[in-house]
Amino acid sequence: MTAPTTTSADTATRSVRALRTPGGLSVRVDPRAALVTVLVGAAAVAVGVVLIGSGDYPLSFGQVVDTLLGNGTAAQEFVVRDLRLPRALVAVLVGASLALSGAIFQSLSRNPLGSPDVIGFSHGASVGALSVIVLSGGSALTVSLGAVAGGLATGALVYTLAWRRGVHGLRLVLVGIGVAAMLSAVIHFLVTKANLVDATRATLWMTGSLDGRDWAQVGPLALVLAVLVPVTLVHGRPLRMLEMGDDAAYALGVPLERTRIVLIGCGVLFIAVATGAAGPIAFVALSAPQLARRLTRAPGPNLAAAAVMGAALLLAADWIATEAFPGRQLPVGVVTGVLGGCYLLWLLVTERRAGRL
Amino acid sequence: MQRLTAEQVTLAYDQRVIAENLSVEIPDNSFTVIVGPNACGKSTLLRALSRMLRPTRGRVLLDGQAIHALPARKVARTLGLLPQSSVAPDGITVADLVARGRYPHQGLLRQWSPQDERIVQESMAATGVRELGERYVDELSGGQRQRVWIAMALAQQTPLLLLDEPTTFLDIQHQLEVLDLCADLHESQGRTLVAVLHDLNQAARYATHLIALRDGRVVAEGPPGDVVTAELVEHVFRVRSQIIEDPESGTPLVVPVARARGAKAA
Image 1: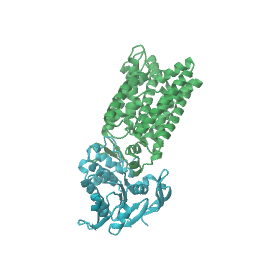
Image 2: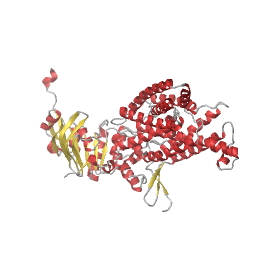
Image 3: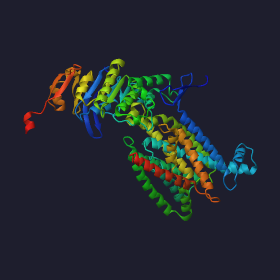
């Protein structure tokens, strides 16, 4: 087989191009979206290197790169490989998961507020994780499993309440906000029930933090994403069709219920494993897909661009958390909360102006 | 046997039954128009024929097979639908939207063949939206937008095309534009068209086959020249009328009877 040939799509589709092979295979590529994905990905790598270099034992950009390539001193090796690289990798995986979850639900609900951290899925995962912490004081793994169970249960609940006979974006958002409020009450109840040690651990966990994340977290997280990401990307095309309404999508041959169940399942699992790994980190799921969309200027869920944007955002937030108050590390959830809150205000105002709220 | 038929279907939304034991055949290569008063079940019938609504009893057959048992994608290569309500995704261009009509013919690794490209171009040319290709769908007028949606349905390249009230919300000029386009598709491309229309005179002018519904039952069907009579119009729409010949097309033209003078004075 010879190399793929690129043909410009004539006037048919603004900038979208098709990559074709002589075998009759073809892939549609939006050059702007591809460029945005690559550039944001490069930015994420750069921020990651800076992040790895920051902290009590500072390293320059070059030193970090050298160490990553295997040319560092023993001390540098230890700090980079054993302490900070796994933490940065967890940030990448969690950020991408949050963003993909956000992209899926915002697209399914056709509403930028239909994000898992607004409509209760991350609250559900928190309730699951906190139950484990408070009731059994379990290990990191069982806490993660608790988060997944809580997320799935909440997904089933919201689906039953809001998703029957097709999605109405606003109904999903309103039902989800209601569910989120109830789950917040459960969260507070669980914290009051806990003894002092568990309550402290629970409160810290609730902020969302990447502190002390090591290779033990990276492995399982990478494994889960290795399954979920391809499944999600394969369903990206039907998801784009669903944005036109159920009738139009079904008329074009999208199997509605199956597609929706698979995507909701993936979306809930993304938010649940991310929450299980790092706690309920606020607003990345809400803002990353929207930022990706604005940069790519392409319709649809923009899954790949959203994922790298989520990774870049969380790395940057973690760097700010490390550097904002020298000598005192903030939990990354505080930073995303402050930045994301500003974004949410702006979003509410523009949505209100556009008459969508 | 015709390609698309409904066999003794009972159609209902939850508990509310719209039609019972309804049987309909769509003649191949016809331009069939379904007419009837509000709430007679015409859109419901079209939704059942396009498999959007599953009959509670009976079945809809496409090429002799129960349409609900067929894979969604397979049906989508034979039967297209222009729904009443579709949402254009934010920031989508006309060409992008029309290109989505190729979805049932594409696959994960077969996303955009030269044939796809050609058909999208042809569909845009046939509906007169080719020069709008780069424009955003949100900025178009209602008539232009409807033509874009029709172009998308055309790009699907289905021998059967169903249109649910394609002229609603359009002014008279755009209504005629859309109907002329449908007639062209029927005549020059030999597609079978089924449309729900409100205006009986437009239906009589454009249809080759008319199905008149009242209370979920077929009251009359056949060529408009045979079907449209004063008795039928009174029976179906509860309107007394004269039927004259349309001076433009020779098809029946329904002229409702004016109110009696006595009634006006009183």
